Amino acid sequence: MSLVVEHVSYTYMAGGPYESHALRDISLTIEDGEFVGLIGHTGSGKSTFVQHLDGLLLPTSGRVLVDGVDVTDKNADRRALRCKVGLVFQYPENQLFEETVEKDIAFGPKNLGLSKEEIDIRVREAMVKVGLSYDEVAQRSVFELSGGQMRRVAIAGVLAMKPKVLVLDEPCAGLDPRGREGILQLIRDLHRQEGTTIIMVSHSMDDVANIAERVIVFDHGQVAMDGKPRDVFSRGEKLKAMGLDVPQVVELCEKLRARGISVPDGLYQMKEVRDMLISLCKQRKQQKGDRT
Image (cartoon, rainbow, N blue to C red; front, side):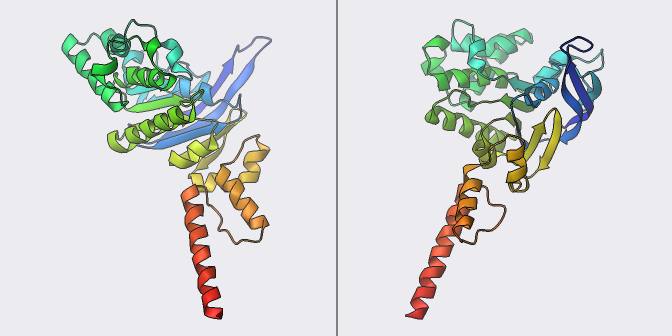
């Protein structure tokens, strides 16, 4: 299922004294099964953009096609659309409200008018996908859980709708390192094992570099870059000029070059640098042995 964005612009409070242009003539396509990382400085338009993908916001101009259906069409079934595109907001646990974990996850499917049997199946399947034990937590209050578990419950509530596309806005915000890695591994598994299309908004360049297959950079409401992580993160100076960080690995490579170590361009993952340094050490050891 593809997402096609054609010349989309969006203006907050159009025509008023506080008019603000959040998106400016954006056109791009996200294909079925892609893992896309969206990065950009605060206020660059990332969150506004993803809210267009499930029809939560409608463009001021242009159109968004979800599986060939124009979400801007007044006759479009937006409830059906939101079953295809699941949006997980930043700090989604703040939207949990039901008495138990089970009821919270079941809220979306119940509103679809599904049978009790189908709802129960979806709840259990969603809990398995996010790594939560039904027997251990289904009847517990969500407010008794850890931050990471609450985040998983919120994601499970979206997965229970069985979306083809999962959009996550800063999914690791506010989590400790253990919770952060747990959520990232969950996202990896959904993409690799389920084939879910993932669109992840993040301020963490390292997270995006480690798991995304495509990176789209927003700057002042426009797409500034769009490509493979290796290509995007190799343009460190341009990213910094836009007020963005670069992955720690890219910074490390720059420091190694400054020390006179020959480091290939385009490295952006720690494994690549580690393998390169191991190879370099072996070469130097061999050269030292040859001289003796």
